[in-house]
Image (cartoon, rainbow, N blue to C red):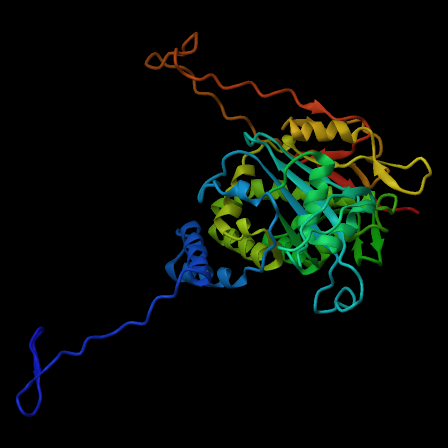
Length: 436
């Protein structure tokens, strides 16, 4: 056997150049580089898992990412850190589309109709992460729509501005970017990122978190959505969760406002579940949720990096549940009674969002019972940690030490006008049946 470095010779004794192995060329930066970055991010987040599981999860998650959609202000997320809670606040637009899945479970997916955003929510995370607001916009509310990019021809002429249109028609007009610009114009806040979730996506997301507990005040039967629940507490997931979120005829007054109240019950419970279960410290749950999100939602490109999803979620992980407030954007009928338009109190809500103010819903707000909720048992409060008694070795200073920062006292929450309904994440409410 030849030693390393020894030359080979042919039959005539002439030296033969050694065979040098050649490797294939590495791919140029592009899609491959993006996949590698995503894979590295997933591995970093799930590093505590077994190596074989991490490798599988990374590849599987990267392959599941759906094509995204870009919003005009997306560059505002460029400085979000890779690991840990993001710095600063964020406005995120969540759109629930009525597009039918290919399975045909909710009607013909080829049916000739415009895609509607029947759910439009704005998630506002405060700059200091001390409070969160989730604002739901009624689907029949009339709004103006500014010029917005044409998703079919982004470099071409923009789509024309419109006035007097229902907000749930804007997705079909110009995609989620157009919905974001309409909500920006309505509220006065900038929305850099967003996502679209469809029927199957809602079912998958609710299953990924292990189900969500909801309270029902009396039996609900809604053949339209498929919701059939006895009075009591239920843990729902999959298509049962979807039916709960879609139910309109079976709850409250049978209107979209009753459906929004139902959605707030679900989301408040979801927030309590995520905080109580320590989701972000559990690699299995983290992977399951990340996979459900990336494979079932069309996200802005900046959010297709799973680490950025984690950094946003971690910003909400320790928020006091009483300061996570779900709000129904206030509306009234127009003077002629033919349209639903923003109420006068909407101006106050807009100003509070722009000022990053901590808000709370008036406990005596009108409409809560009418629109489909009743008080439930309060969520158990976590006991405050006991402060250690001072010792002689570590005396408590009477005055702040010069040169140190004294934590600011949290602002007293602003109580929203009495016609604005909603609830906090700490409040357990029960869905009421439509008796009509």
